[in-house]
Length: 257
Ligand SMILES: Nc1ncnc2c1ncn2[C@@H]1O[C@H](COP(=O)(O)OP(=O)(O)OP(=O)(O)O)[C@@H](O)[C@H]1O
Image 1 (cartoon, rainbow, N blue to C red):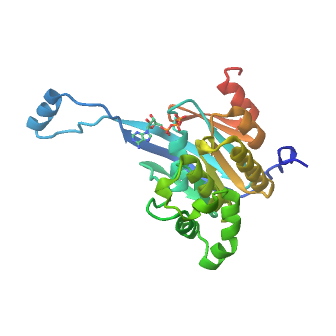
Image 2 (tube, rainbow, N blue to C red):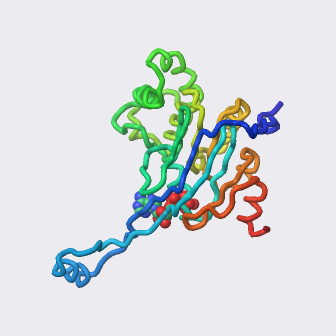
Image 3 (cartoon, helix red, strand yellow):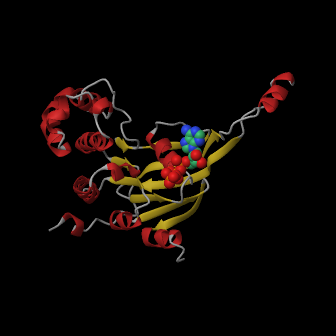
């Protein structure tokens, strides 16, 4: 049977909550240049107030994800999807609310994040896998599989600063899936892989889902998420605007509902 035809298991209503996002707020500085006059007035007024305007990229978002759910975070550009994923993964901290997670998390969020540019691919595999919670012996046992999956070949001994973005993705994805994560967070980065590798990644993600792993994915590829995810969470300007079946979420985004 082809992996694309593999039926993914339904999620039990009694499944444990593995990600709890409660009233999450993330505030950023709205970056725009200031005139000399504005800066001067601010200075002579004794630097009162904040010269920087702030805005909420997330405005009190609450979502629970149960074990085995396959959730797509959807929404138009700038709606807060990647920010939410980064807060769930712990690479960014909230300004309000909280995120609680249960289980080992592997995050593929930014191309090259977590890789040290001056180390070789080989050293980065060890470093990355250790960060994801693997012992040295476990990494050694899986090392060849990781390199084989990545198809990096002889470049495994090249410093990763010389890698292309697709090569970074290949190695990062290979490490992440071989560390046996319970929760898998994936941002749009699969898009930098070439088509055969993307297909391979999607096959692997479906395999993990069939094993009951939890997936949270950010993507604008609605056809792709409709094949993998069972639930869609739609964000709109930092607010949750829909949370329900993936087909309905897609219809909303396409303006059909
Ligand atoms: N580090 C940052 N500093 C300042 N503003 C930021 C930062 N990261 C994100 N933002 C802003 O927060 C808002 C939400 O960004 P985010 O990347 O979460 O959106 P997104 O829904 O993933 O968008 P896209 O579909 O375009 O990838 C945007 O207005 C963005 O400019």
